[in-house]
Image (cartoon, rainbow, N blue to C red; front, side):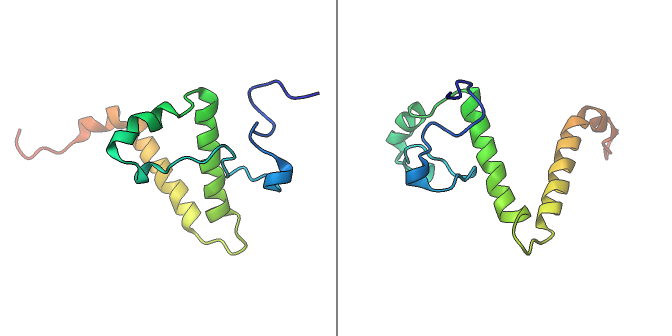
Length: 111
């Protein structure tokens, strides 16, 4: 029985014979022109070819997470970079969450 749910399982574009072992950090759809290689007149048509849905957005974030995992967390000899990346990202998130409380503590030179 085939999985009919919109999440879970392999992407529809994945072919085990053609692609080999599944890699969650890889996009298996049809390759497109990279954004930085576009001419200005090609930008609207490039955006029109994008799939805009919550599932596509989750796929983008999932692939980015797995690329980060493969590069910084899962190598045999990993460094301390991933720890500091998580710390800095959490500092930025918590600053943004508490900005309304913190903005009243500004020091002004003139009253």
